[in-house]
Structure formats: structure tokens, C-alpha cells
Length: 260
Image 1: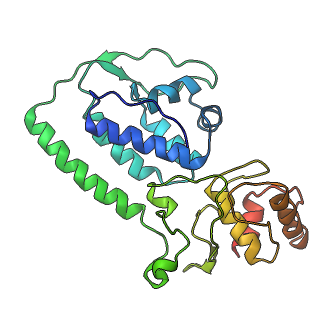
Image 2: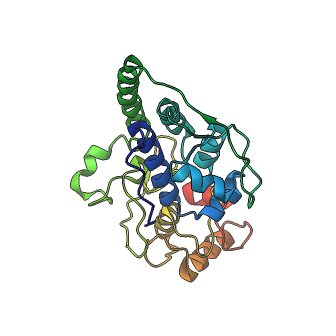
């Protein structure tokens, strides 16, 4: 779990809510700041400002983060719109284009924007509506989850798509693989069909892959979200059997085999 700096008490609650959501999403993905910068095109220093509430990220950066973390951008963009109303103090507001990876972003202009009481009340109402929409969009993908009762594999933790809990390295997760309405296999830990994971990767999508490998009788050992030697060997066995490139990495072609 990342050890984040405490956000300033003076930070508007709408901004705080948005920043905390970005932090959780970044932690769930298992990406460090350097990897996040590489995947999004926004520099490490830019993400340091965004994730510590010192600068409001542009919409393009929010969309890039969503793609890097394999999640829908719409809920994040909605939260950003609400957070933008909270930037009424003299703070940095990013103007759009991210700086090249590895280089600091250009200094942004400082703005001061007074917020009338009526706007605050309306914004609070909008925040509540947006959060309802966010929870609806991030609800578990399995519409028959009620049938699983207390035996579902997320005992003690919410489904990762809720964004409430983080992947915990070293923990063994239960596997329950089923087919969705499209006939594709899912274990409930990730929806991805394209994300590239390989040896040393540690995140939810690795748990998903390990469960699918176990289901296809190519056991990776335990489903702990850590892509190690056993998982790599299991992937190679599946790839060889499916007559696709045997490289021990899971990309679109291998996901297709695992999901079908």
C-alpha cells in the first residue's frame, strides 16, 4: 500500500474526494509514478502534483490514467468536473498538454475564482448525484452475484471494481470462474482482454489470469496476483497448446485463449 502524504485540511472536500479516488486507482493498478508517466505521457512530476492535490489534472490526463489502469474514464471525468468547482483558491490549474515523460510540466497560471453560496449548495447536490452514478457504473459486473451469498471470493473485501480496497501482495485469492452473458470466462478480478502482464507484474489482472490458468488445468500454483516463475511456465503451456507465440507474457492473444 502506498504511503501518501496527508492532504491539506484546507483542501475543498470535492477536490479531496477526487484526489483520493485517483490515489486509490493508481494503487489498485500496482503502477509506480515512473510507470504511470510512461503509460500516460504525463511526467512523473505532473502526477506528483495531481496526486497530492497541488494541481488539477486536465481531462486528457484523467482519461490517460483510466486507460492505464484498465477502467472506464467517465466516472473519473465526472468527479473531475465536480472537483473543478472546488478550485476557488489561488492554486495551480493545469492547462492541458502534459510535459514529456521525465521532464517537469510548464508552470500553470494561478487563478482565483470566488464561489457563491448558491453554487456551493448546487455543487453539493451535484456531488451526491455524481457519486450515485459512479457507484452504479462501478458495480460488480456479475448480475447474479446475489446467488453467491457469503461464499463469493472477495470475503472481507469489496469487489476491486468498487475502488474501495487495494490489491494486497502475498495474499492468496479464491477462484470462481464462470461465463458472462457473452460466453466469456471471468473470475471476477479484472475485465481486461488486452492488458499486457508479464513476469514480476503484481496486480488484480494477474489474479484474474492465474484463476483462468487454473481453470484451464495449467496451474500457476496459487492465485496471489504475483506473476512469478510458476505463472510464466503455466502461460507458456497454454500458449504452446493454443499454437500462439510462446513468450510467457499475457497480451491480447493469450487473454483471448484464456477467456474463451
